Amino acid sequence: MLNVNALSIVINGKSILSDISFEAKDGQVMAVIGSSGAGKTSLLRCLALLDAPTNGAMTFGGAPISEMQAGKVGIVFQGFHLFPHLTVLDNLVLAPLCHKKDTKATLCEKAHALLAQFGLHDHAGSYPHSLSGGQKQRVAIARALMMDPPILLFDEPTSALDPELVNDVAAIIQSLRQPNRVILVVTHEIRLARQVADQILFLDNGCLLDNVTKDVFFEATSADKSVLSPRAFAFLSNLT
Image (tube, rainbow, N blue to C red; front, side, top):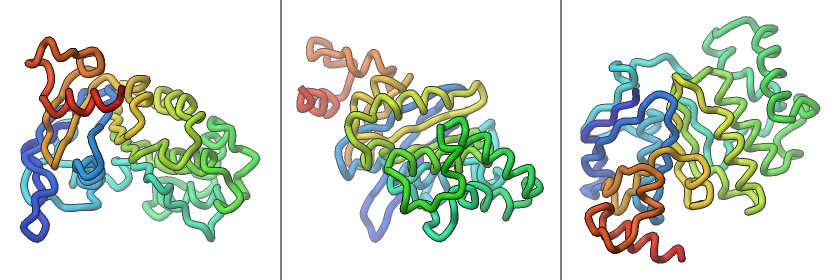
């Protein structure tokens, strides 16, 4: 289980995240939604240990995330962040090889298996510039999976893709569910949240206002004001 307790970030006196607390059960997919500037990506960057919180604690299975082995929090960046001078295969094996996870031969075998799983086996020797946006995204996902992460984070996985590919992205995320893995997806794409999420975290202005099941969030009506925050109701009304 992933546990986030009273997480806060203050930069130059400005509150970026304020007292964020939630739990994500093993096997669960959580969608983090809200308007631009709500703090969604900042939350992911904290979980990935890319940004240090001002206050709060983050644990997985009762142990601090900061004490987990390298690569156990996998993140698929919005811009993919593939190394342009490396082939697809080399992008996949670089991190586990640097951390001495296995021999190069074994890691290459694992990388080829992942590329085949994502329909990219023929692109092992290609460079990122020759790939489509969807192909780059699948490479980025495969790269994260090379470290067998129990926590997997997606930052706006559909933002750089054609709208028609939302269903494909949803299918990929669903295929990555595992009983011992937690997946968090930051997204503006409500269709994606509806398709993949068990739980919705709704952030606004750095605060977590709602933490409810997908059905509660998307089926809530203004008749029951106690179900969601007023800001969430306003957010949903702007989608229709």
